[in-house]
Image 1 (tube, helix red, strand yellow):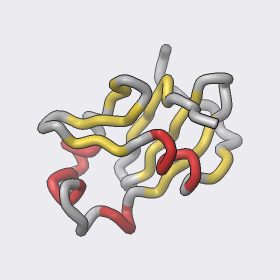
Image 2 (cartoon, rainbow, N blue to C red; image 1 turned 120 degrees about the vertical axis):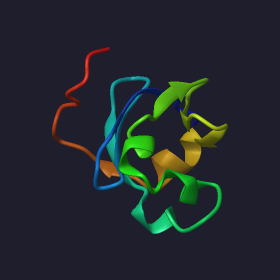
Image 3 (cartoon, rainbow, N blue to C red; image 1 turned 30 degrees about the vertical axis):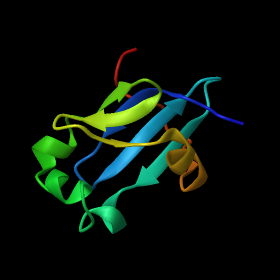
Image 4 (cartoon, rainbow, N blue to C red; image 1 turned 90 degrees about the horizontal axis):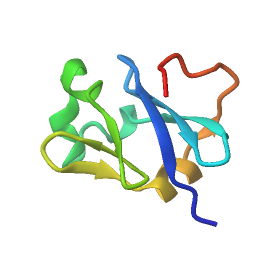
Length: 86
């Protein structure tokens, strides 16, 4: 089942709070990936927090992205609501 990301909130601890189509909210920890290319370019917290949704994936300026399948499979359910507005 392919679920697109519809909202993302990037936090200073290098986690992504995600909302998938259908309303499911999950938390993905990017910290273990921050030494790998291309995500090593996101080590600056301000750059990391510039995450946005593009075509159902999470992307950053500079043509960096991560696919929704990886985000979903390697994330955990999130009980807290996303704070950002739709």
